[in-house]
Length: 206
Image (cartoon, rainbow, N blue to C red; front, side, top):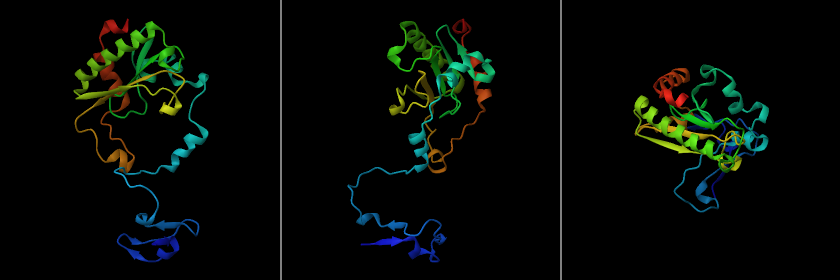
């Protein structure tokens, strides 16, 4: 069985230079072909830094909810694209792609089935308008649209309902998000907000 320790490699030259043991002694480097497990086609990306979110959480209190605070700010400061009677549209501060917007009800409700018929109708109407505007402004090829309901489902802010609308282009996926943990965004958020807001139909603001 090939079971090697960091100390076995210390000072040895490899293809990428000397291997230096920087952690505590006894850390092992194992040849995975000799370990227990059932092989499959998936690659694993280990992200232990995310344990802070699992152990401590990242959910704001109601008083700190950014989706409750945003409507009290100017459109420019809150990155709001359009305001309706029951819901509004704003840019995601951490976009997957340029033009990634969120549709939120003004009321602080968590789940889709808690929204009123009026809120559901306006969220749907604003979503359709956002798609038309983004298609005209961004010339994208498609969309990812959806909601993460609850912390277990991956909602970043679970206590305030919000729907994601993410423009997609045929060649927008590359190695940067996975290898470099970086998203390449060609426009600043303020510029994106201005271009979408300018193209938004006037009657939908009323």
